[in-house]
Image 1: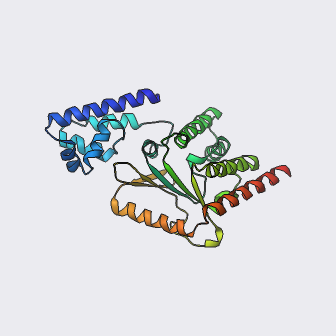
Image 2: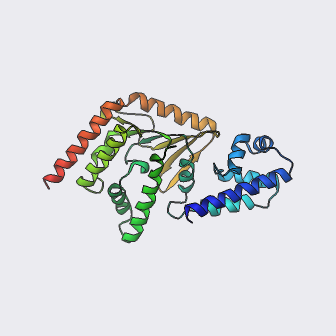
Image 3: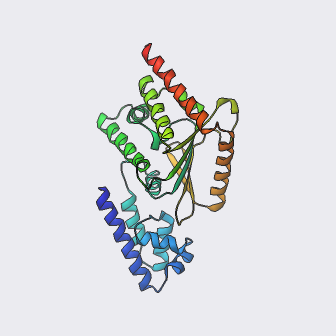
Length: 277
């Protein structure tokens, strides 16, 4: 589904939600209280500014007695085959986030990946698929990154473990280009990047990625990922724990300027390796 038609479909979702809410005699605040979100959150659904999570759509169906209409519509709209089933909802949330904070222990985060790096990741994990499949996945990943070019881009804070800088994903040339891209975004102040050095030793969330997202008028969320699966967390207690772990990582990481210098140095190391092979 094209972006324009997808947005039109979400606007229909919002229009139907407003109509059925009013028919049931609920204000936005009243409906929000009953499905455990704010009234402003309901307003954003109705204006197609924000997309509800699946459990919220299900609670709306139950309360308004709509026979599963909102759940079925949600599933159809969120079913973006360019992304893994467990990740499609995260992509929708990224588009409306006001702040994204991410920790990457092993790979460059998708929002920062160059085409060459993304291609290397895809080919390593899918050695028997066609080139067309790989290029479609790479294009989808690059499309996600466009939110960093928007005038209304989110505040984006990334902590990379030093390990991420060392592995030549896609090859030495591609890795040098990838690190140069990250450094350039940092120098342009589009992202704030820190590196967690090897010298720190043990650290919170050992080996686990986490992505924290904040919104204008909605509760924050946390996303974590395992093998071919992901967990989108909105329980306030769990999100608070994830935020606390991220704060500890931030405190242990190198300052931004020192981090950019290290990233640029690592990029030069990969260039030298490329020139000698």
